[in-house]
Length: 196
Image (cartoon, rainbow, N blue to C red; front, side, top):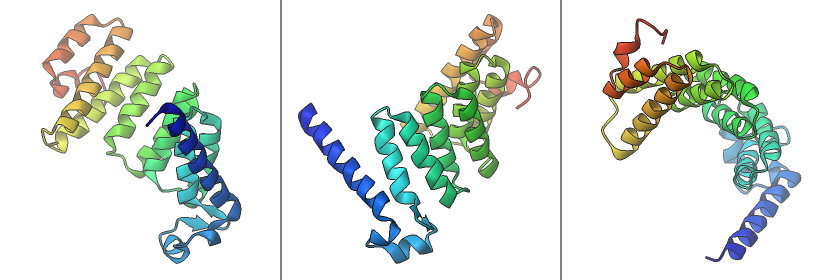
């Protein structure tokens, strides 16, 4: 599909979502299902707001995406994935401190959420808190080990990203010894020096 067709399609889809948001939740065909799933409170349809947020995020319109995710969180405040999505959007818009707050809320809801812990570690790197970043990354690796993740390509890629990011944090700490030690991929080797 040519680039112009993709952009036109994206504009059409965004317009449809904006219309749905403006018309309110009663315009949904599956209104009763949405109510029963706690997707709608008042005049906010969380599903529509999330969809809009993703569309804006993909267009690098991060402030609009943040607004949509925050609106959705008024309906679904216990949605750890949505808090993580808000954190990622804030981080990508250069607001790492605010992203950290969102990641912590995600982890308050689901403490063993590996991706959220990883994202928190990356945001800590972005603001220069390298030791804290290492602790979060080590915690994510320990969680992944304790879950006995299957050796699928996806799990291997997540693990590889975690180890690479941890190594980067160690190098930013100017701890070449720890960076070299991380090549062994033994999470327990760092217990004496880090709390995780």
